[in-house]
Amino acid sequence: MNIVYIGPKYISPNCDILVPDHHITVGSLQSGGYLVTPLYTDIQDENSIIEYCYSKSLKVAIFGGLNTSTKVLACLNGLNIPCIHMWWDHTSPQNQALAESLCPLVDLNVVMDMTTPATTAYPDKYLYMWYPLDRRLFFPGTERDIDVCFLGTVLPEFTDRIHYLSLLEKAGYKIHVRTGVYRDNPLTIEQYAEILRQSKIALNFTMLPQYQCHQSKTRTTEILHCGALLLESSNEHTPKRYIEGKEYVSFNSFEDLTAKIDYYLFHEEERSEIAANGCKKTHSNYNERAFWRMVFDKMM
Image 1 (tube, rainbow, N blue to C red):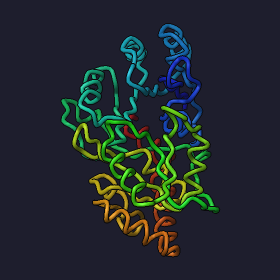
Image 2: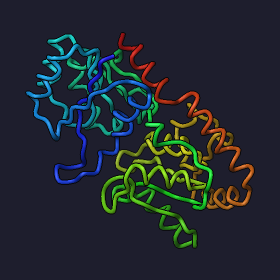
Image 3: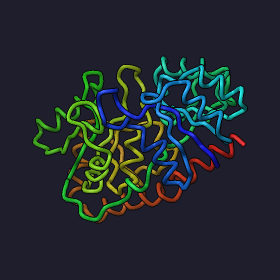
Image 4: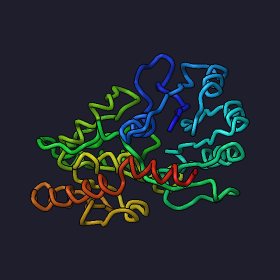
């Protein structure tokens, strides 16, 4: 299958850190055994991308990012090349409106951060999925010398996670906090995955205060792939795929969070069993091969 991925490569033109979704798109396709040619919109212009697509017998074009060119989409439509758009941040009303505006030119929108369909005039053009990952990077580790970690941005709009992390620090908990794969002091994706492999418990905060709703996070799948115990805020998304208390653990208050950190750090065998169950289900049911097979089956 001749596939192209069309989207940004870097955070900004002056930054050589890969966009956070790169392991979800190009990396997961490669890990799943597909041959994919990346055409990077922050490196190549529209005309060169169109010319490349015109010269090849493409089976499908996969788009990512929030600056998708309608010119490129229209040209690929004219060439009868199916177009898929990946949405890892579809929760915001702005991005939902953007997806709707592209629907006349897109054959399928793949939404990964929501499990409940949003209001749309094009219901047949949406598929709600999990996050595919590059399993060459995300796999379980054996030596876990970090008790608890949180990897993600701590920006002013994320009041929920800031509140919890501040209370944990005041209560004397030593949480290994890093800002993830972008923003200030960024980790590489390899470093990010390595910290998850070294962690016994990995925290995840799913609330988006600015929209007053929970979001299905990439971090959920990343943690489960790496075999740490997923301890995340209660939400409506994760229980649709995993069994709470058997494959991951949730919390609904600061007191609940600290009680579960204490409990699962002390009860190593139970913690390891839950983490192993979550990791096993992720690798067997929610892997990148199953993801892309479902997406392409929907298209064909």
